[in-house]
Image (cartoon, rainbow, N blue to C red; front, top):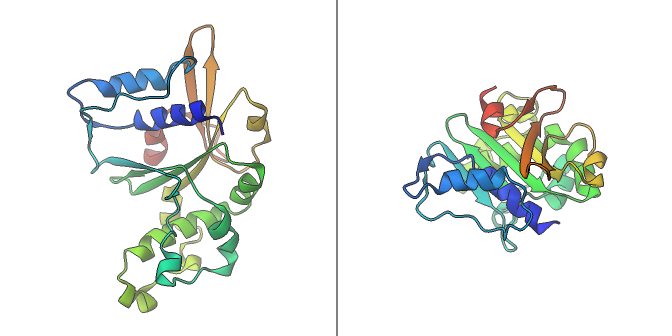
Amino acid sequence: MDQLFYSHVRAFLLSHQVGEDPEKNLSKIKVIANSNPEGWDGKLPTRGIRPDTTFWSVAESSPSQPIVPWWWYAKENEPVPEVVRDLYEGVSFDFVMVYQTNKARIYVVVEPPPQAMKLLAQQQDHLKAFLLMSVLNKNIPRAQREHARVRLAGLMGSKDAQTVFTFVAFKEDEPAYRSIPPGLPILSRLVHPSSKTANWSIRLPQRKDVYGSFREIVTA
């Protein structure tokens, strides 16, 4: 993974924040996100920012805690549906953004390997339902879960599952971008060296529209 690109993705995601910002660092983050990152040290000015988490929040993975909403399954002996076992064992994300008002969850993985992309592309409907099911069932007290558990089949293709998005992030000027399988939501960046700007594009399968902000897709 290109660590500078990873940091640039982080800048783009954090540029979606709203909240108190007495030192005007949010505007600086937006400038970084939309600029050519060449020569940038990957650091962001976050001091003083108090995000409005009732509107939007973000979590980032760490080496000890990847972004997977089924992290609790082994600890609590939660059964894994066989149809999604490959997802359970082979998929994780780098970031998750939650839009509380729209009840939308956006998962992002930066430059995943081909095998992971193949898995993501082949099982998009199952993946959305599994992500949502894992979040919902974790909120049910363990003692009650056996009788109140949300089932995967009931979420497949549901309206609620359509509020879950899973994106792969790539640089448009890299060969790997052209190898992304059809059917995957894409976050991509194109740097314009002459103007020193970076353009971010958000694309959803079977839609011709190109979005510049995740807020556009959760309100569409």
